[in-house]
Image (tube, rainbow, N blue to C red):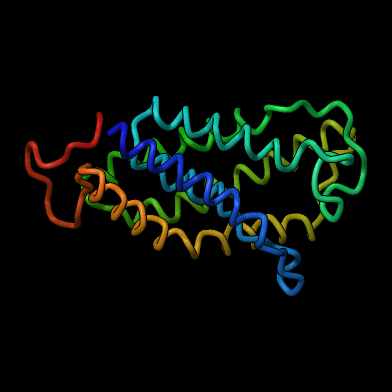
Length: 197
C-alpha cells in the first residue's frame, strides 16, 4: 500500500504540472478543468484515511503555493481585488473536508460499485469551489454571489467530472501495478480485496 500511495503522490505532482497548461474556456463562463482536485478526489476513494489526509495536505499545500502566493492572491483574471488577510493553508482544510466526503463513498467503491464515485466527485468538487469562493468573499467583506460565478463553479465541476472515469481507470492500473487489488463489478468475496479498512 505504501508503494501505491507513493505512486499516487507522483501522479498528483504530474497533475500539478499539467494544471499549469490548461486554460479556462471562455465559451463556458471561463470554466476550467481542475486536474489536481480531480486526481485527489479519485485517489481519496482508493486509499485509507491516513493516506487521504497526507494527500490532502500535499494537494492543499501545492494548490496554495500555486494560487495564493501571487500579488493578488491568485490568478488576476479570477481574483481581481487584493486579498491580504487570506492565509496560506486554507486549501489543506478544504481538501481534507472534500476528502472525507469521498471517504463516505469508499464502502460502495470497495464493493465494486465505482460508478457512485463519479457523481460524488462532482458534488465534492462543487462543494470545494463554492466554499473557496464563499471564504474569499467573506475575507473581502462582500458575500454577494452572482449568477455568473455560480455558473462558472457549476460548469467547472461538471467539466472536470467528465474526466473522472479515465482517472479512476488510471488509478486501477496503478493499483494493479503496485499489487493493490481494486474491486470489480463482481460480487465481493471474503479476502478478495487488499484495500485498507
